[in-house]
Length: 236
Image (cartoon, rainbow, N blue to C red; front, top):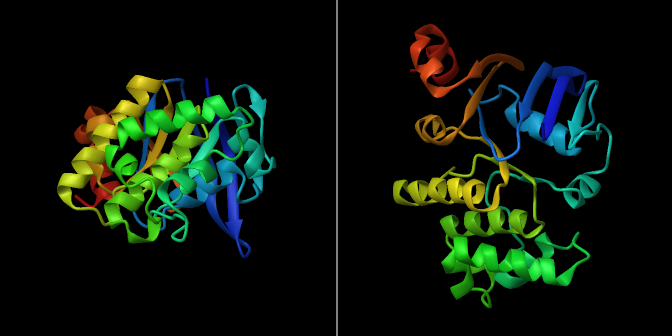
């Protein structure tokens, strides 16, 4: 097992937002995490990577308890979180952004290998590698943000709403890339995403959150067959 989250609780300003949540990610797996806005999905990802402290519970990564460990250490050990919104350094070039993403690596040849992979996945980034990131389109910024995550050479890549605000054709391409990251490089992916149709299509397993609680674990077909639960999680 690559990631095991057990009984995690997280709070903001004294209010419990994530309530005893457990999940797992196996090597080479895409795991989808769905639920309505405010369900606690982003809070859970931030707690896993160490941005937010745990009130209770445990996070185990590669067999080692990492609860309370600093985020930069988790990144160095292969756990990378890409926030929503295509966050990049707008005054730096595309290439400089990618180098920043790989700053935890101490092996320059490995960084060069990672950059080669990124340019293969996102050819537009190679074309624009010497231009400022601030002039990229929204879709290109999202590609760059994911590329920055990949530059660190993750074993687990956590993506938070990667398709947000993108045109349908870009969304289709993005999910093709997500599958390629798993298939070509055996990188496990924990995916928070509102485009549920795409999640159901690409995820090996799916978790569903509601009001801070984990209320579903299973495959796409199982979720499709449970009408009441599907309506609760997806509003459809």
